[in-house]
Image 1 (cartoon, rainbow, N blue to C red):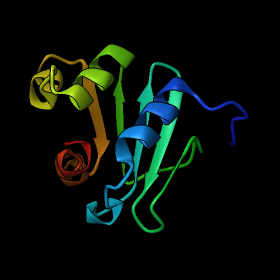
Image 2 (image 1 turned 120 degrees about the vertical axis):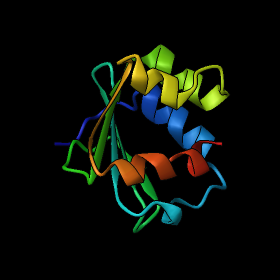
Image 3 (image 1 turned 30 degrees about the horizontal axis):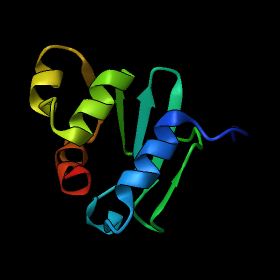
Image 4 (image 1 turned 60 degrees about the horizontal axis):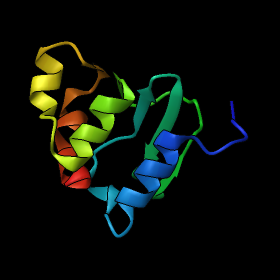
Length: 101
């Protein structure tokens, strides 16, 4: 399912991913940030708002999401406190830090 308007989360990821090599990720990632979708495809380097199945789905809120990018929130602490949920391949989620930082 495609969405028409660029979401805040999608815009944020696209800005922060500029110059980053998504091919280091061993599989696709779908962020669910509040009700917004961000799909990261390492095969073609695209970042979209397509709501499709991914190898790893990460669910969180906008504050935690942005905090992980600006390093004010530890992804590990967010996971341990339930602010971040991971479904699917945990190895892909662990590799994500190379793209975020």
